[in-house]
Amino acid sequence: MQTSSQALYRVAQIREAEHIAIQNLQMPGLQLMRSAGMAAFNALRQRWPEQNRITVFCGAGNNAGDGYVLAKQALDAGFGVVVYTLVPVEQLQGDAVTVYRDFIQAGGQVSAFGGWAQATGVIVDALLGTGLCRPVSEDYALAISHINHADRPVLSIDVPSGLHADSGCALGHAVKADLTVTFIALKCGLFTGEAGDYCGDIVCSSLNVPDSVLAQLPATAHLLSKIALQRRPRSAHKGHFGHVLLIGGNRGFSGAIRLAGEAALYSGAGLVSIASRAGHIDLLNIGRPELMCHAVETACDLQPLLEKASVIVIGPGLSQDSWAHDMLRYTLASAKPCVVDADALNLLAQHPARHANWILTPHPGEAARLLGCTTADIAADRFAAVKKLQTEYAGVCVLKGAGSLIADESGLWVNTTGNPGMAGGGMGDILAGVTGALLAQGLTLVDAAKLAVYVHGEAADAVAAMQGERGMLPSDLLPKIRELLN
Image 1: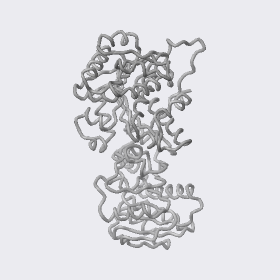
Image 2: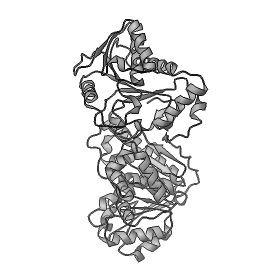
Image 3: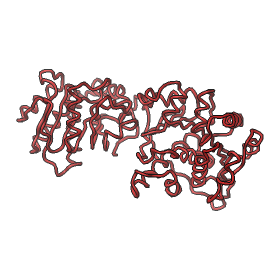
Image 4: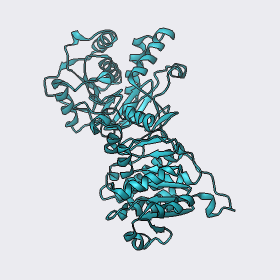
């Protein structure tokens, strides 16, 4: 992925930037359209230098105009160019009419798409653009299906047609691009939700709109970047790097808390203790004697462990019985910084509270329970969901999933590491342990969450590169996490 900025904006903000550029900086809309088409063509040539044929699918709006500019550029460069339109060209309006006529005057031809097309070379998707906010209509769905089944490389202009540019949701059907060339600034919906299945690589062209224009608009979010940890002093000892207490592993769920505990060890915590049911204690540190395991059956058993800990992780394998309720209640009463995960989040949904000193790490199902809505509601606007979580529960909130989101009161970040190999039980337990360990080593709440999420995905990407995604185990990530944090 190549971008000129880490800031993400909603479509309405990009339109405002265009308006400022046109009205205040005398950058005509036609100039911006021609710049967009040229930028897309240059990106096509750079990505596929061996190609000399293109097939362009155009719709009715400015996105189609960008497509006609690209088509003329390709024609001028000696490419074989085929253009299909889904609307009568008489319906084109504004600057799109001008660039369409430029293409025709240069010797180009346009054919109506009648449900079938002979696609050669690189397919250029200039169908719908960023304005789409409803399910794709039948005729566009047919064209999108044709593009996706043509077995040709695909470039999408601004956003893959059918993908909501703010939320990353596919609106019924969407083009699966190999390369998306977007303009002025990065759009939020290119980096979360279903976007990873459709965008391919992403490049951004500013169209020469100066940074001062975007500076007038507050970014909705930023792409997450890796935070560098300081080198440890040579005089360091275990007391310098915190004591993480992990609470969970109810009857039958000892594996979850073991994974979280090992992740805390591999991430550099000075001491790692586990509080779990008595029946698990003899098993939890078999093969991992560095874990200090304690039988906790009552709140009285838990209290001395809480006093010694600097950071608490609660939730992995916790379940939702009376023991789990007691563990969570006493944890929150301690006022220690904590990471709240898994069933601790489900319990929290039953008795909502606000704490400034915690990190919540829900997946979409847990987020839906915390907000009293459905998982579909969460998917419809993940940015709004994570902001609402943070507003209602305070602290730092991590909404897990493809393109995990992190929010605190000051901002919102989107993660770009990770892969589908992580779609398995136990991956969240690893993340909880890593987060707790980084918090114990002195990172702020938000920096611990940001680095943990980034490195968690980065480790999974490294494992996938060596061994593939299918069958990836959470424990496979542990050595890579240690390596990456060093």
